[in-house]
Amino acid sequence: MTAPHNHDHERQLWDAYAESASIRECVEVEEPVFRWTQYHDHPNDPGPQLLGDPRSVLEIGCGTGRALAHFARQGVRATGVDLSPVMVERITKRWGPLGVQFICAEVLDHLATTTATYDAVYSVFGAAWFTAPERLFPLVARRLNPGGVLVFSQPPAIPGAYGPQGMYKGGFTGRAMYTYRYSYTPSRWCDFLTEAGFIDISANVLDAPEAGHIGTLVVRAKTPASP
Ligand SMILES: C[S@@+](CC[C@H](N)C(=O)[O-])C[C@H]1O[C@@H](n2cnc3c(N)ncnc32)[C@H](O)[C@@H]1O
Image 1 (tube, rainbow, N blue to C red):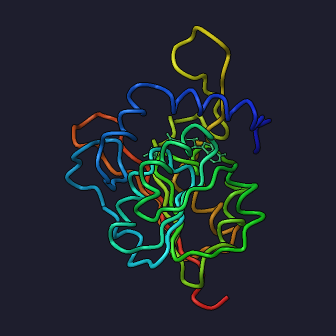
Image 2 (image 1 turned 180 degrees about the vertical axis):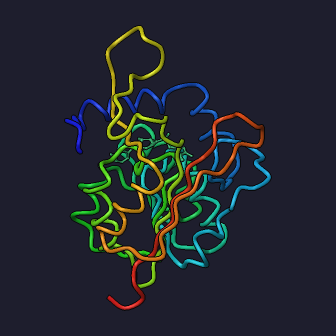
């Protein structure tokens, strides 16, 4: 099920996010880092090796760009797409000198029009969370090289709350800015990926470091080695 996205409106929300003090500091001061979870030092974070040994990566909804900077430092061709012009301007200034290429675009629009292909496409609480999977996954599959990998992480669904979830920005005061994020059970994520032609699919919730705290959904799938 697809929600009535208004990308102009959502762009404003993500610009406001990019302008927040904590995100600004992340972009301007923090060093490159790669992690799938929301915890700074999760002992069981599967790390970038979940993507194999890619020569090229595309991060969808790349936010601060720190994960791409990590890959660029390893000599990987690193590309990020993000909806927010404010974010893209700042991350290009910070990480462009490392060779990371940033594209300011809505992910579905970008994937439908680009001809570039990648060994790995990933999202860390990024565009895979904010985009209808039945529209996103077929487009990702076409932009992956044979045997390519898609991995994404985000919070697990709240039991019984599936499909697009409306979300206001910040507190509940000020301009009404909202977007939609998509929540499903691990097995439903697997079904979406199967329908889009992916194989070797896994979807699991990684426990938080502390019992009873919010875990992380981690989903991985591959394209067939020969199309
Ligand atoms: C929570 S942040 C991503 C966090 C990121 N992993 C980081 O380290 O900063 C979500 C990002 O996804 C981007 N985004 C949301 N919807 C998008 C869409 N439809 N197309 C492209 N980017 C999108 C937002 O602009 C935002 O920068």
